[in-house]
Amino acid sequence: MEVNDSTLEKTLKDNKVVLLDFWAEWCGPCRMLSPTIQALETEFKDKVVIGKLNITENPTSSTKYGVRSIPTVIIYKNGKEMERLVGIREKSFYEDKINYYLN
Image (cartoon, rainbow, N blue to C red):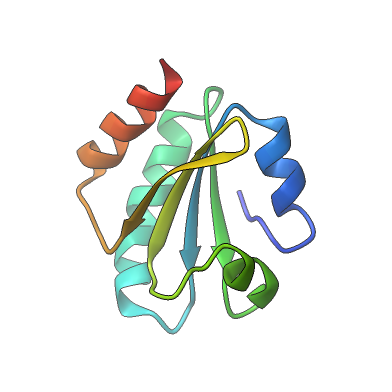
């Protein structure tokens, strides 16, 4: 799901668990992480919102949330930041994190 400056707050407020990938097209590691994010979105379709926020097109949100390096994946629960993961991890790592916050 694409998230932007105007939809981010509502997305965080309206969903129990949100995994948000802050990325940019010019970022090689971000492009490497993209298939993992897409797979997670399919796997957790009805349980968790898996979102992507392009920092080039949405600088307000990346500034507000203090994203200084990309890719940065932030996991929110009930609108509150729970974990911030910078860099690329294995899909199973993200799955474990999502399952932890779902319980």
